[in-house]
Image (tube, rainbow, N blue to C red; front, side, top):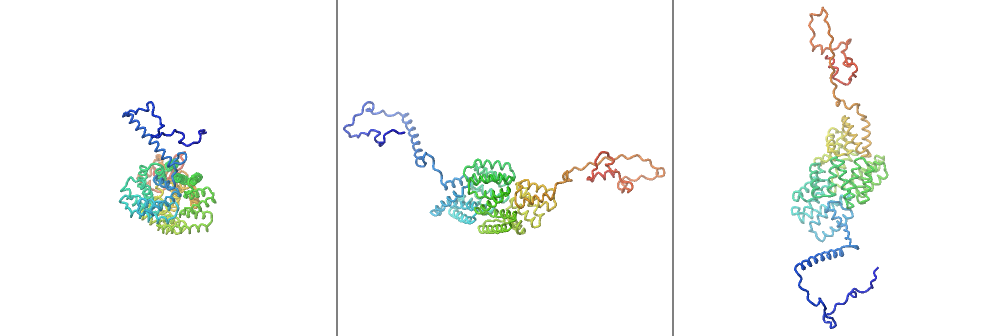
Length: 564
């Protein structure tokens, strides 16, 4: 407790005497003599001490001005958080992204020729449209990014506007355009790390795995940390390297700090668990993502899929409806419609399919190509020939990812062209990705073509990879597998080694009869090719070798015995 009397600070020290005060006493002792001039060493020491003291005072002043009570630095606001996330290559939360958009909108109204700010605003529009499911923002993004390029062309250093246009093209599923914009930036500024994520997405959409791998490796060299780990995990996942993908995704989740970044990493773990058929683990990861960032709406749809596998149907329906309300993507409408069909709710399914068509039409007006999801719907619930035409156009446009190859193969099969579809289904499976739906499609096509052994292996892989990969297709996969039955004992016949021919039996010495002694002996070739008499059948190899089981399935033993 402070026991000092409450008085002004000036009363704690004696007042300074005035120079003209007649009552001031003269100086006494050493203070009356002027001090000698300081030495050079003393001067340097004092200067050093003064510099340190000034630094301490300056730091204290900064803390006093910028800090809160207790000297803690002020927490960054939503705009600063969104800018920091973008600078790190990580996703921002929807609330922070909203604040950044509002801030940049006000700025460019007063500074319409600020090319960097326009590029940031256009890229933020792209991200908002992707995260909210509102395709109308893509048109805003395009206009804003073009304004940025009018203020400063890309050739003059406005590479961020080009990166924004590449991200816009990827969001619209125009991967060729995204590739062109991204490669333009990489050619001029090869060390600009922000271009590599859009190049990875473009190469993946085009099915160019080699280029996607190289871009991922380069991104990891230029930008360490969680974003690089996330991209590497996605690369491993697309190549079917489950263990590597899981280990890398876990490291990304452990190192993530920002809520949106953490939720994205947890969502990735949920997707990997779902693809492995671990529905409970997937549900836990999606729940954790939603607790970390309630605005991570994609985790609502992931949670719905996992709940269907756990037969928690009411919760799954609620999760799907919530996901469609907050993130209206066509693929979610298709999944919910198929769930309704599996439950016998055909009327609700038709409502969802009508909604799907409306969403695809709205996306098309905004420049977004949703041909892949529309073709999947047509192949199973509409016109398979229309699905083939949609996917043929995708293939001609060099969209040759595993997803497009699988969908085209299945659409051809559903349209009655299974032999042609087999080529594309195999191409999807040969990428190595562990996708139960791809394996089911391949197995169903192989079964239709009479390749029962390969069909059994493909269907077993589908059921083993994820037993509940689809509420409609998973039961069909099990039915097809049951119809094929168990493989024959001992495996396929052409895989068994051929039995060696038995040793010829020794011929008994026969003494010719006297009346036929002058007759010529029959030629060996005629004896070997002569048909056996019905009354005296040819000797059997099994009878000539006691204790050896008869090889009824061998086709080479009997002719060898007859030739002997």
